[in-house]
Length: 130
Image 1 (cartoon, rainbow, N blue to C red):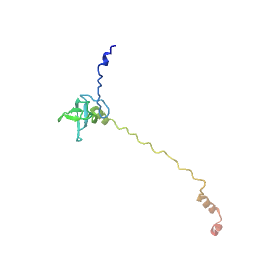
Image 2 (tube, rainbow, N blue to C red):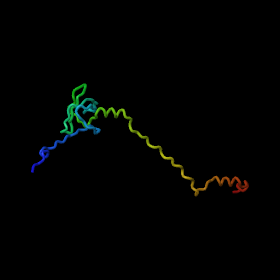
Image 3 (cartoon, one colour):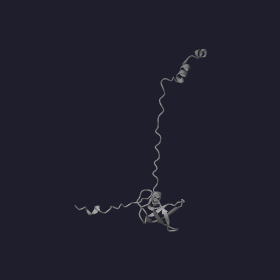
Image 4 (cartoon, rainbow, N blue to C red):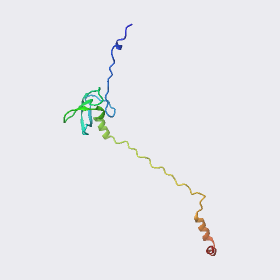
């Protein structure tokens, strides 16, 4: 019994590296990010090393030296950065509070107005004697 030819060859898995927002990274991509001391940079990926989780990309810049020890997961593709700046934020104002009418007056309470009306109809001599 002979084995199929493809069982003798080990399968090589291709490791795909991703930017901070999940987009797949490849050599030549324009990128933006911040370096170790917080300075913003822009450049192009010239080398990817998928065997490490940090210091896995080299970025060349138009001005200044290449950035050797950068992590692709901490930067963005330049196109995604510009899209984020041009897209207005998805802000939805909260709905106004619902109008709740005041409760109707209770029938248990006696209003002083009817008593005042009864006194006004009464004889002034009787009101003075009370």
